[in-house]
Image: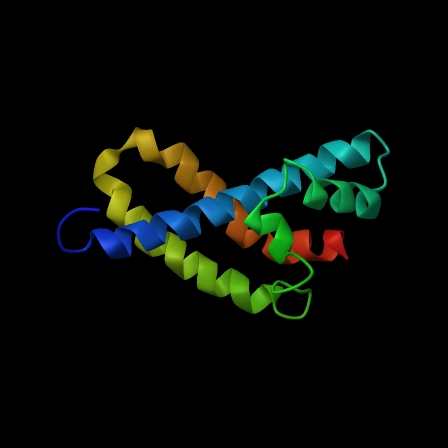
Length: 115
């Protein structure tokens, strides 16, 4: 993947993408609510379909309402490290970083909506 430190950066990118996907899920559930779609049934369909993701699969299994607050704190630490690592990229990374931070920050809400 590259020189020294690229493995660590790859892990940060992986984690940031997970958190951005959490925010995508949160947005999608808000849209589904507005369309009066039943969330539990929708989640079941999405998990079985092409829109499934690791973020969706983890909700309700590894990510629960009981541990989401703790996981949020860990994810926010990761995002602080990620933000520092991509700081020199400027605006090209800013939107993605903000989205991933929102996904981490709102993880307890997302976990509660899935249950």
